View 1 (cartoon, rainbow, N blue to C red):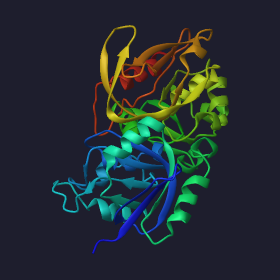
View 2 (view 1 turned 60 degrees about the vertical axis):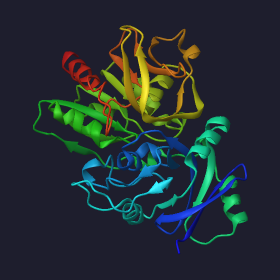
View 3 (view 1 turned 120 degrees about the horizontal axis):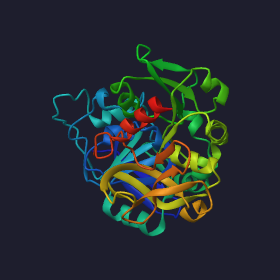
Length: 360
């Protein structure tokens, strides 16, 4: 007989399914991602810290788990909700199944959930606080845990995923960039190294002088979890280095750059998470399909009298997908050009970053 798992939401909803992964209880913001593939990349993405992830595609685990696909040093999501978890992976690179992967990092999973219905609920009412239990607990206690936890806007998450000491990679390369690490993904680092750009990964709270001491050609402000307004140290650093270095931001990095120049940020109803978001470049008219994972975005009206301008928009909801400084070599995108497992439509942004690094 299979063990029972329970998912409680702050609105009083209680869903019951089957246990996989670790036997434990975790809380977090319940969000959905729409990719048909990429569960390993998503679970290990630092941007999911503080969130319980649900896949809208019904079958998960069918191709197993390989460390090759990790985006960090392990699972960062707080839990995993699926319709069906396949325990028998068939991919040649697979090292373990999905349940064992979750158990290794003490992360609970619940299967047998009507993920379509839950997705529709979140789309209608917005993301909700939740609690996922794969061990025994009274229904009322679990519901209280879901309801009484702090909102994601009230939690400092970047400090849970950022490096604590400098890391230097590609020392043999002539060109060098500093990454301000708010939750950098492995694919972003690989994209720079592939272009023979040395990488210095520094904690998110590093001072401007600490960055300049490494004599970088440019600064990359990385993706990461949570509310960007809480990452005050990074905002101040970008503001102070704006006239000293070319700066490029990805996802949370875009929000941090925007805040540094006076823009406003708002929390989206249910965010963008998946590998199929259409983005239009307003200068060229080109449309790209992108990978995304964010719940906050820029208020475009707040940019009107600022030196930054909106350069790209999302074709589903019109939200801001790219910005550019009108005078300085500073730009950013809300999506992930380093996308794993894909798509790779916007990988050329790392070429642009390299050109700016060499030019300035």
